[in-house]
Length: 196
Ligand SMILES: Cc1cn([C@H]2C[C@H](O)[C@@H](COP(=O)(O)OP(=O)(O)OP(=O)(O)O)O2)c(=O)[nH]c1=O
Image (cartoon, rainbow, N blue to C red):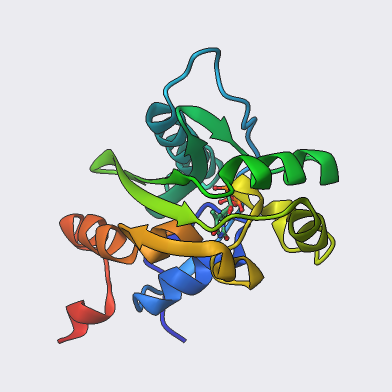
C-alpha cells in the first residue's frame, strides 16, 4: 500500500474519487465547519474561506502531520449563493431559478502545508435547459440533489439539464483536476506524473 502524502479534508465521495484520479495517495478526514455565508460575502471569497477553513481545521486536528487539501463548491446565480437545498421546496425553487439561465459554479481548493498555505479558485459557466416544475419535483424525488450545491449533480441524472459548459467539468463535480495537480506539484506532492 502506498503511503499517503496528503489528507483530503472532505466528506465528499466525489472529491476522493477525483483525487485518486490524479494518482495521489491520500487519507480522508472530513472537516466540520459552519457553511453559512457572512452578510454580503462575495461568492468567490466565500468558497475560498470555506476551503481554507476546512483544510486548517483538519491540519490542526492532526497537528500538522501531513499537508491538508480542502475544497468548496458553490453555485451562484446573478451573485446569489445557492448552497445545498434544505428541503424539496428549496430545491425546486433553486432548479426553477436555474432553468433556462447561465449560472456559475465556483470551486476553491486550499492547501495547508508546513511550508505555506495557498488557495485558488475555478469558475465555470453552466447553461441550463428550460425545466418544468414537474421535472424539478421529480428530480428532487430521485434523492440526487439533496447533498449538492445548486440542487443538481452534473455527473448524475442532472447532467441532462446542462446545455453548455465553459470551464472545468471536474470543478463542477467538486475538485478541479488541472488546478489541483498544479497546486500539489508546486509543493512537490505526488501525482501520477511525478512517477514518470
Ligand atoms: C453543482 C454540483 C455540485 N456537486 C457537489 C460538490 C460538492 O460535494 C457539493 C457542494 O458542497 P461542499 O460543501 O463543497 O462539499 P461537501 O459538503 O459535499 O463535502 P466537504 O465539505 O466535506 O468537502 O456539491 C456535485 O457533486 N455536482 C454538481 O454538479
